[in-house]
Image (cartoon, rainbow, N blue to C red; front, top):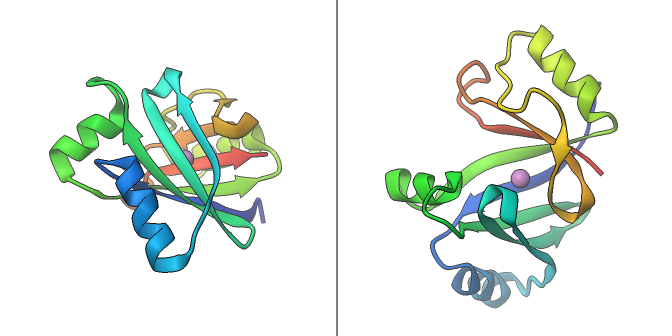
Length: 133
Ligand code: CO
């Protein structure tokens, strides 16, 4: 079994501060990590839940995938991050199983992780992110 944990569930939101305040108000959740990822044109806030995270994320540029997603679909679940020990091996295994990679090779993600995305088409409609800490 290559998956070790659900790393995060990513939820696209219009207003990050407002969404963080909502989770704080409802659950007493606090932000464990917040980061602008320039490469992806996103800002994200990670709320820790046991050994996983809820990742609230919004776009910082018009051409970011999250901005486009919000315009097209509105707020909602954007992707699921599966934690793995070896991102390259998990990516290879997914491709061997017939999945279509978005990232041909693992690349840097937020909070110093190594990640690779898998296209929802060919993965039962779910955008999957493989996350190696
Ligand atoms: Co993610």
